Structures are given as C-alpha cells and as structure tokens.
Length: 606
Image (cartoon, rainbow, N blue to C red; front, side, top):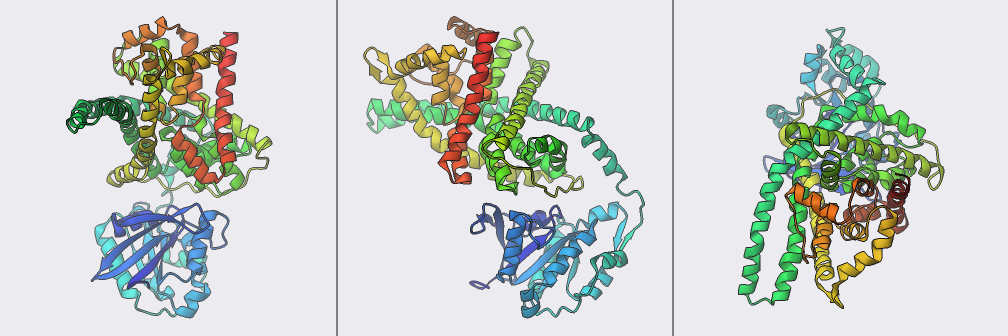
C-alpha cells in the first residue's frame, strides 16, 4: 500500500473480459505505462469505496505463469514482485477449467502463501454462459476454494458495484489457503453443468464461413471493401464541414495579427504557411480516421480480427513471418504509425522487426484521398457519381490495397531470407466468442487512444512543414522561387520514373503528412505561393493534362503513392519502437526502392 492506496492486480486469460471489468471499475481515471525494460503497455486506473482509494492494474492476458511471451512475462513479473495488496483472477464462465489452471498457479506463488495475500475469483461472462446452457455451482466452488467467488457480467453496473465492495471487504483480511490439492479439471467437472449439447452450434457455423479456406478470404475482401467504402463515403460531409470551419478562421486570424501590428510577411508565414498546412492536414486527416478506427475497433470487439490472423497465418508462415502481422497491417490502413506500435503484440523480436519494416507498404488513410483522386480522374472517366461511383472507386481502391498486401508478403519473405533470417515462431491464437460490441466505449477508445494520438503527432510536424513549404514557394533565387529550382532539379529523375519533378517535390515536401502531396503539386503547377484546392474535378483533370499527364503518369503516381517512404510521424514511431536509426533507414529505403522500380518498369514497358 502506497499513500493509503491499495494496489489490486487484475489477472486472467486473454479474452475473458478483464479490460471491460477494468474500464467499468475505473471509468476514465486510467493511464498506461510500460513495464520497466518492456515495450508492452500496462493499464492502471483508480476507484474509491467509502473514501478508500484503490489502484487497479490490468495485467496482460496469460494462460500460464510459465511465460512464453513478453506479455506473459509482464503478468508473471508483476505478480511475483509482491507489489499487489490483493489479486483478482478473472475467469471465463464458458471455459472454467482453463481459468482454474491459472488460478492454481497463482495460489502456489510463495508470497501468496507466506503473506496470505487476499484472492478473489471473478467468473465473468455469466450471461453468455446462461445463453449456452452452462450452469455453475458458485456455492460449491467457494466452499472448495475458501475465498470469495463472484459471478459477473462486466457490462452490468450492479455486478461492478458488487466487485468493488468485495475488493473493499477483502483487502483487510488474511487468506489461509488450504485448497492447493484441487484439480482444475475435476473441480470444473463438479461445478459446471452443460445443459445444451450443441451450445456452440451457431458459432461453429459462422466460423466455417469466416475461417474457411475459400469463404474466409472472400469475407475478408468484402469486409475490407465495406470498411473503405464507409470510410470514404462517410468522411466527405464532416470533412467539408471541418474544412469550412477551419479555413473560415484564416482571414480572421490574419486580420487579428495585423491589428496587433504584426509585420505583413510574418502574417503570410504564420497564416498562409503554418496555419493553412495545419488546417489542411486536420480537415483531411481527422474525419477518415474518426470513421476507420471505430470500424476497426468494432471488428475487434466482435471477435473477428483474431479470425483474420487465423486466415492469414499460413501465408505469413510461408514468408517466415508471424500471422499476427496481418493485424498490425490492418491497423496500418488507419495509420502506419499505429500499425508500427501495434507490432508489440508479436512476441518474436525478428518477426516484430519484419512487421515494423513492412507496415508502410499498405496505405494509411492519409494516402486514400490521393489514390481516390487518381482512380476517379483517370480510371473512372465517364462513370457517374453517387453511391455506384463511390462503390466502384472503393472496389478499385481495394484492388490497389490488395497489391500492397501482396507486396507486404513478398517483402516479408525477402527480409526473412536476407537481413532478418530465421524460421517462424509458434504462437497461441485463441478464437474468442462472438460478442456484441460496446459502441460507446468503442468510440471513446478509438478516438482518444488512436485518432487524437495520431492527429496530435501529425499536427506537431505539419506546423513547421508549413513554414518550410511557404519559404520554398515564396523566397526567390534569381527570378524563380526555390520550389521552382527544386522541381527543376528533380525533373530528370521524375521523367525517368514516368512522373515529373513537381510530383517528386510534392512527395518530398509531403513527408510530414501524405494529405498535402496533391495540394503541393497544384501549388507548384499554379505558382500560387500557398496551398490551393480545386473542387472542380473537370478543371483539375484539365490542369493535369495541360502539364503533360496521361493515364501512364497517373498509374506511376498511384504506384509511388502506394510505395514510398513512410511519413515523418511513422518514421519517428519506428525509431522509438526499434531504438535504431539504421532500421528506420531500412524502413524508408525498402518501400521507396519498390516504388521506384515499379514506376520505371511501367514507364519503359507500357
């Protein structure tokens, strides 16, 4: 106990609802931190009962204290560190025996026995057990174990209040454990009664569809198509509103600075350089992320994402990589920086590095607007708009992304046979039951933990980038701007790749955020000195045609947009996760070389 605060360890197998209980007990009074020497984050939160403070530590899910992964090491180390004043073990009511095995191992810890540390067994998901006809004799279970046993539905406020009260009543007691000779298998047999023979019949039927060798892949592609269509179609209206709001403040901000006698050139730099780029990134980046991440989290809560890993594991195993890499790859669709951080779930350091280095081969939502613009202008010419046009654009975008997935598998194979040689490791993958998502918590978690985190990092880099872009576009050397000289210098290389110097300059200056690549290209073509938008697709198409674009130029740009260096936020995240500038450089060079080679091949063959 520190500062009159009791520390309660929350332990259990994966997918038993520990996090739901943790969120219900602590509300928003939570924070995360890394265990010393580890990259995996642990969640901590507080709650009070009758004025007494409690700190709840949500340990990573583990099947055993004989640790086989970094997450399991953290759970074991914390339990053995004697920092917990009490331990609550959470079990799944639909799979009691597995939870009882972990409970017995915790009971056998020396400090539990020597100190009489209070233990509580919380049997969660009792509502699901009831639906499946599983009956548990809690009275007999408590008579055998001789410490509190709670039946719980983590979504029920009454049950959560009962958990708080039980913790409060237990911390001041000393446990006397005389039940170490029980058999988890026998105890489960005596206390658990199955009244329905085919209680998993419906789940098994769904699993045959979503994990089948043929149907599983079709379902994955259709869900991918649906998520992208909802993201693109749903983001248009809020993006326009946010755009109008932020850019309506531009003139007012400039007037306010002039009223304070700020020099005109400084107003230009701050408002039409720094602020304009920042507003552009926020208005284009925020709405798609605010839609994609909740959709992704809903699939996670439903229990579908582990089935995606199951479907993709054979393909990644042939590449000597880990099946969990497909989950981090899916996170990369929302943001590659989030995908890189998600690679912490991969136990093998070698396979984790493979996943980190290849994550940017799938496009983040920052590249979606550019890809959609190219697809719409050059490959859907003559197709009417509306829902049908959006669906067809989403289909072509999905095919483009499948190319990125294929490149991820190919580069994973290449790295596993060169820089990161090794054989694939084994891992335990549990297919959790299908559950109804908690939409309120999904929105809160996806927005605060992912969307705003990524947006904050991007904004920190976009602001100084706006200064650099304004300087290049408005400072002249001779009779031409520095941006003109830069595009001229890059033009021979761009022509060799089927592009031009302006396009390459757009990608270089768009390093802080992919959302501003096309605006920079338009700024250079129109020589406006500041980022511009063209809402008229016909005028935009004509402008590009007038500057030498054709379908081959658009195809090369599409390929280079798909395969080029990660954005600055992702690069900083890679450096933080790997601790090495060398591996960060590899993560930059790998997709860039792939994009360069593909563009050259298209330019000279087609």
